[in-house]
Image 1: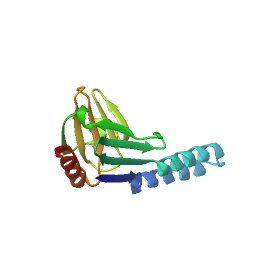
Image 2 (image 1 turned 120 degrees about the vertical axis):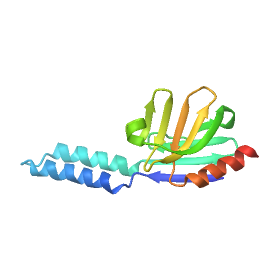
Image 3 (image 1 turned 180 degrees about the vertical axis):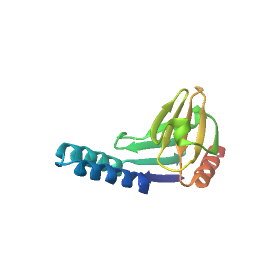
Image 4 (image 1 turned 30 degrees about the vertical axis):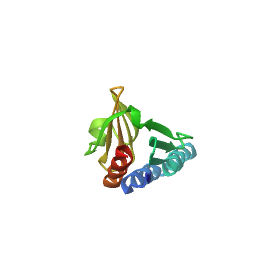
Amino acid sequence: MYREVQRFRQLWLWVLLGGIALLVVMLGSISWLGLGIVGAVAVFLYSLRLETEVRDDGIYLKMWPLHRSFRRIPWSEIDRYESRAYRPLREFGGWGIRWAPGKLAYTVSGNQGIWLQRTSGRSVLIGSQHVDEFATAIDEVHAG
């Protein structure tokens, strides 16, 4: 019904990594270890992607390469849901897979997402660049 793939492509992130690499080079003799670490972080961030799918049996999430397979949240475990704005730094300390007391977030960029209240009491926030289409897909599948 719905599929979204998000990647870490924010300009500020790449400028920051480039600035760190430049600083490592400017500190005198080139630190190959430092450049290697910055390069490894850059490759890792470039390869990260959040895949979100709405299917007949639930919502599926995968943050590749951290997850090899999808994580499923079945409809039976979702008490309620809503699209909402959030503050990634203030509420979760940043982007990525983030934990806070009683809640979990999967975010890549922006400040819009779908908030799921699970029957267990724990909540999950899934960031989205297309929150209206995401919510519509949930409405259609969940209502049907």
